[in-house]
Amino acid sequence: MKILIPSALHSYTGGARAEAEGQTLADVLADLDRRYPGIRFRMIDEQNRIRRHIRFFSGNTQVFDLDHALPAAEELIIVQALSGG
Amino acid sequence: MTQHLGAPATPGETILMVATRKGAWLYFSDAERQAWRVDGPHFLGHTIHHMVLDPRDGRTLLVAAKTGHLGPTVFRSTDFGHSWQEAARPPAFAPAPEGQEGRAVDHTFWLTPGHHSEPGLWYAGTSPQGLFRSTDGGITWAPASTINDDLQYRKWMGTVQDGTPDGPKLHSIIVDPRDAKHLYMAMSGGGVHESSDGGQTFAPLVDGLQVVEGFDPDDVSFHDPHCIRLCPSNPDRLYQQNHCGIYRLDRPSSTWARIGKAMPADVGDIGFPMVVHPHDADCAWVFPMDGTSVWPRTSPGGKPAVYGTRDGGTSWQRLDAGLPASQAWWTVKRQAMNADAHNPVGVYFGTSSGELWMSRDEGRQWECIARHLPEIYAVETATRAGPA
Image 1 (cartoon, rainbow over the protein chains, first blue to last red):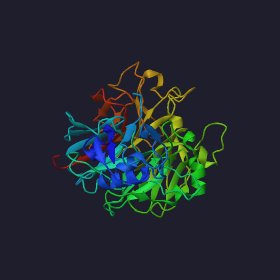
Image 2 (image 1 turned 90 degrees about the vertical axis):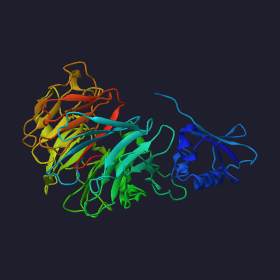
Image 3 (image 1 turned 90 degrees about the horizontal axis):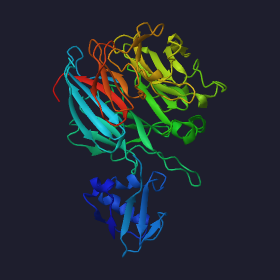
Image 4 (image 1 turned 180 degrees about the horizontal axis):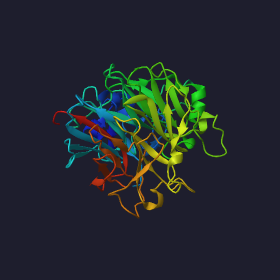
């Protein structure tokens, strides 16, 4: 699956494009973390909650649940959502 | 904390580690401290709560970082920031049992190197309040204490609404230089605590401390210590800047004495930081702030001043030579004031408006060594014999 990485996480992936495999958001993030160690914890806390200012979209739909199934043909878009000075 | 690297008899290079809301900076000077070389920013855009150099090896630098979007982590350098490695396992609470809502670390707030007999050991205090430790120089971290999950301690810690505006914190982790198992720590809110087993368990140490009027000082929940320091020259003496005054504790007594009552009434004894002299346990410095009415938390009257004592808090002297005489409305946070190990001692503070100030004569005269930085959260010092 193709993944669009926000700029805040390019230090892990080296750029905006990455790939990972998995049936669910949890699976994909686990595989992404195997490829880029440490990246998952910056997005998902130790209680398996999506961090406050991180958003996931698949097929133009926001994904709120780590158990959500992701169609392999759709790109997973990770967004950093925050404003303020 | 003041760090002494190598032989203190011939102190040489002086290093300031400045942590800010939007990155970290290193400042280098020699023993004269007349000119400073700046190195930074490191981690531009990251919220850096603390940057600390390991006094045991003189080269391991740890940084507590997060960003607006991303979760908390710890970075490590052994070459003074030329390269950084992220912790393989940053501080994180244990997963909650099924059906319970667990806590997640919002940010690591405080870093303390372990005892000199335990190289590689570090402690970390977090928001919300948790104590963590690393035994490999900051690469992997694990919960360090039963207090993280203890029901009584959880009650004393309160909720995220009970602490400071950006989250309740565990801070002021102090290792007794005579005993690696003897620790102190403090929580805002949640009081001061002491451990005799290396942090596995703690007991409250709040006798004599006042709380906000109308509340019960016997309830540890209501205690809000802002900063605790142990005197290196007399480890039986601690000083504390509290939400409700300035205190001193001389062990083995367990009752704090409010020495801030000797401060001028129009200034008061409210503030965040507490600094102790590295060689003279009767000498300490504070930076008062306005704690009246709605708690502006600015310099009282817009006239910033350090106050120092040379007699253990019996009397205080205003030390404002060189500081703005009026219309300066900044303050200094609890980690943002420190002293070096030179003689005479250099004292430093960073302001909420991004200015870095220093005195090379123990507070008598002040000068600004940097302006226009982001809001400064922490200033640490180190001295070492060799070049960077």
